[in-house]
Amino acid sequence: MRFGARILFEDVATTFQPGRRYAITGPNGSGKSTFMKILTGEIEPSKGSVTRPKKIGILRQDQFAFDSYRVLDTVIMGNGPLWDALQERETFYAKPDLTDEDGMRLGELEGIVGDNGGYTAEADAATLLQGLDIPEELHERKMSELQSGQKVRVLLAQALFSNATVLLLDEPTNNLDLESVHWLQRYLLAYTGCLLVISHDRHFLNEVCTHTADIDYQSIITYTGAYDDMVLAKTQIRARVEAGNAQREKKIAQLNEFIQRFSAGTRSAQTTSRKKEVERLQTSDLARSNIQRPFIRFVNERPSGRHPLEIKGLSKSYGDLHVIQNFSASVARGEKIGLLGRNGAGKTTMLKSLLRNATGYVDAPDREFPGGLHARRACQPTSSLARARTAKVMTKRTRPSAIRAERCMSLVASVNSLAMVDAMVDPDANSELGRACELPMMKVTAMVSPSARPSPSIIAPIAPLRT
Image (tube, rainbow, N blue to C red; front, top):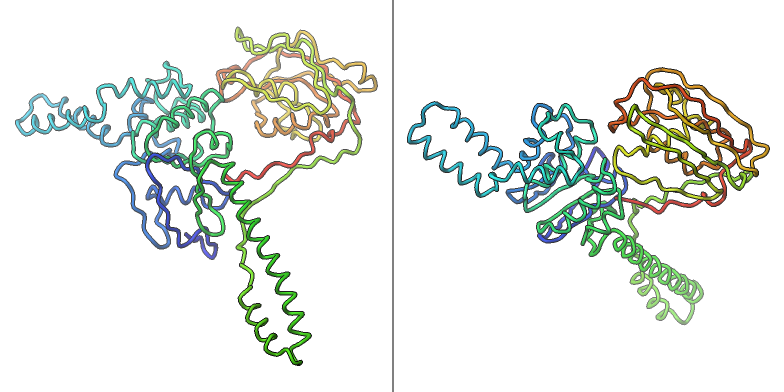
C-alpha cells in the first residue's frame, strides 16, 4: 500500500487464523488503520487481493451515521442479515392483506430471524450496552441524544453484536472506564472467532491477544504472543543480526589487511582465496525500523519542598449531587498518583479543582469556568512551605471552558513544578456533572513553593508504544 511516494507496506502475504486474537501494532502513521480499512473493503490496496469471510464485525468510526435510530436498533444493525430481515418483516406486517407469495416470503424471513437470534435480539443488545456502561434509560433514546463517548460505546456494542467470524476493532478502549475495559477483555477472551484489534493500551493487548501482526520494515510480520512478547522477539532478532554483522565486519577487516599485505608477494593464491571469502562474508542489510523511543525530560534546576501540595477539607457539589466531600490529601515530592473511577465519578472535576490556575501550563481561556464551587476549607501549606506564597482567587460566572484531560494528567505528573495552585472546578462535559450551569461562588487558597521545580523522580523515559 502506497500514499504517493511513501510505502506503508508492500508484497505482504499473511493469513489470519480462526480462534486467534491478533494485535495490529506499529507507531502512529505506520498504516494500522489503513490496513484495517483494506481488510474491511473500505479502501482498495495498490496491488494484490484480500480474501474475506462473508460476515465481518467492524467497529465503525462515524459517530453521526446512526443519529436517527434508537440505541437498541443501532446495536442490532451490527448483524446485517438480521436487521434486513426484521425491516422487511415489518413491511409485510404493515400490509392489511397478504398474498400467498407474501406469506411464503414472510415464512422465509421468520426463519432468518430465528437463525440469527432475532427473538432475543433486544435483550442481547441491552446486555452488551449495560456491560459497556450505557444505562437502561438510554436504550430507547435516539443516538443523536447521546454524548460522544456514549456513542463510541454503542458502536462498540454494535460490532460485538454481529456474531461475525472475524471481528475488526480499531481503538475499542477509547472512552471506556476501567470497569468497562475489564468487561470487554472478558468478552473478547470468550470470543471464538478471529479477532484483529488496534489499541494504544498495551496492558489490554497483553491480556487479550494471542498473536501480534507488527507493521515495520515496510511489511507486516506476525509474531506468536501478545505485545510484550512481540517487543522481546523483535528486539532479539535485530540484536542477533547486528551481532552477526559486527562479527562479519571484524572478519572482513582482518581478511582485507591480509590481502593488502600479501597481494603482490608469494602468497597470491592465499590472497585470491581471501578475496573470495570476503565476498562470501558480506553483511546483511538492516532495513530501517519505524520504532520510536519518545521520552519526557524535566530539567531539575532546584528541588521543591518535601510536601509541594496539601489539600484540606475540599468539597464540591452540583445541586444535590455531592462529588467531593471534605477531601484532604498531602502530595509528597516524587509521588505519582493514579486517579481511578467510573465515567462520571468526578475524576476530571478533581483534577481541575486542583490544577485550574497552574502558572505557565494552562492557557488563559482555560482558567475561566462557569460558576465556582463550595469549599469549606482551603488547601493549606505545611511547615516545610513556610516561605510559600499564597494565591486567593474568586471565580466569576462565565462561559464553559474545559481543560483537556491529557493536559490535566501532564500537570499531575509535574505537580512539583507548580508555583501556584488555585483549586477551581469545571463541570465534566462528558458526564451528568456537565449539566450543571449556575453554581455558587467560592474562594480557595493554595500554597506551593514559588521556587518549586520538577523533582528527579519524574524524569523517566517512556517505553515505546507502537500500537
